[in-house]
Image (cartoon, rainbow, N blue to C red; front, side, top):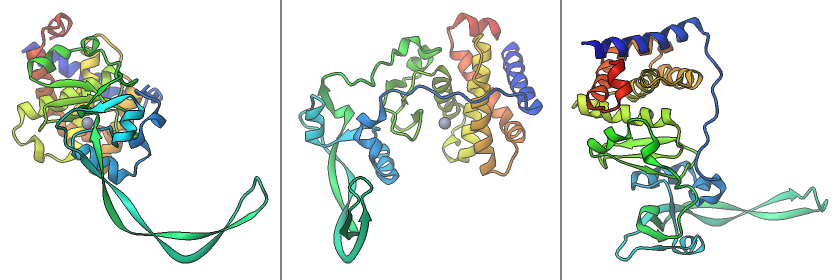
Length: 277
Ligand SMILES: [Zn+2]
């Protein structure tokens, strides 16, 4: 069928660029939110991971939400992050203050354990709209497919960790940027879970290379230029996890990648994609 032809053509174009080394510089994405506004941005990686596991990229204490003029919805349960329990160590450290020219003696605090701090997920609050929620889902290419597959697409704050993610368990795509490429990457993850019942167990490097290569190919198929520099860096990073070159990593997952793209083309009502197919 011609679908595979056009997907193959797009993928080949990308692989040729990767092989020739003629790749543009990666560009920075604009992400939602000045990160400093979000308490979670200052959290440790462990706490960000904890919040993510509990289904959110932004969680704050009751008072912090009040400061943002948002209120915790009735009946919402808190989730927990970990705060260090500090104890005086009886060790004194001299800290030189450049501004005043004085030396301060401060007792070093030791972390002797953690205690749970209750916070509430942004999803469980209401009130003043958050600055980082300007995502107009309808403007994303192929957003109709996510809807048809029962996937909720929502904006999430950038917390320094990811530009977006797909959670199969919760059937949601969370976007911390309005980058089309990021959305197509997450949509490709979703498509992968649809075509392969064992996707969950697939190695993470493979899943990421599949999603990224599919997203770049879909950009071409939609008549747009993919950010090849970013695609290359991303794929290179994950290929290294498997001790593969970027091109070899792509070759390994090529069959699955074409199926992933095909699943999306089949579901698409976008004229351009169907015509390309
Ligand atoms: Zn991914």
